[in-house]
Length: 397
Image (cartoon, rainbow, N blue to C red; front, side, top):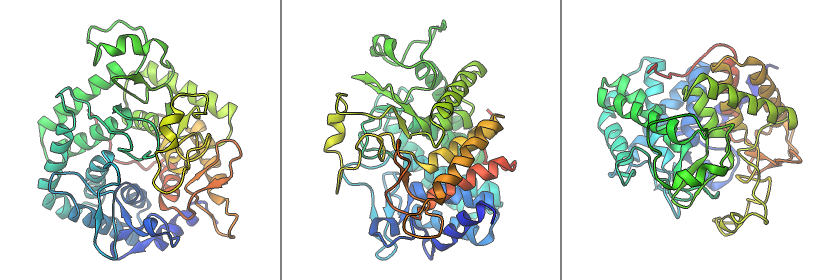
């Protein structure tokens, strides 16, 4: 059986009248329509060209846009049984705004079905406006509160690169699709700020850093990959897999920076020949940041070293990285990751089917969390589609 067939089978099982659920397991939160999970699953569906999955992608988008808050932000998830939208627990999710806009415009571009995108223009405007407001200082970077994006039990807060890159992609798609040059200009300005502040080197640059704090905070920061983020108190030293995958996919930076990042990825895959951690290295009790992890959970503590967000291995982001590596012409590294994705997603202690677990232990590679997660299957589908020459829409700037 081709490796993509189990992934497609899971996505078909996840179809509901309201869109894709996060997992087919009878776990209450995962039986909802999530903005982030649903859009990423929908993007994989777009590259599958499966008509039933394409229809469910549109249904997912309709559910999410119908639940947009009047202020412009999008729900964390929607309960299809009650229609109740959740906008987050302790904190809402900044990345959902960009994911919703990306999903909407990728769908319109891929299918040629423009009705939904045309009807949702006022909602796209509100979404982009709330991101402007979340800059707080008009300096082109969104400030992300702790627990404010996908890694909602991790430590990062402040100017987190992952969220900035999604905003750039959303602005570029919207600027091209709706013929709005001011959105394209905003995206271009944000790119300049990212390239100046998130790559740590000594190259001469006349542009000032984002804040004076960075002058001394960057002295011990990494130099072989894009920085995870910073805030008034620190520059984060962890490698952020999702952010660096998006940086490659969106062509951030110079050819030399890209080559340095690819060399880093090659080294990591040689040293740890399996999936790459979402964030590395894992935070341990010897690290002062562990205190910020210990109580940041809703139901149970999941961020022990090498688990969950804290060094756990997530198929979804490894799939995005494999796609990005194909995008920049690194098929050998991409195929290594795809092979590891197959090995991981096949694991299933509870049954004979592919397990598509949420994440895996960073050292033992044992599955962790909920099985049959649609975005774990979506990560694999995205990687395989890119290997076959298919592409999502990344407008040329």
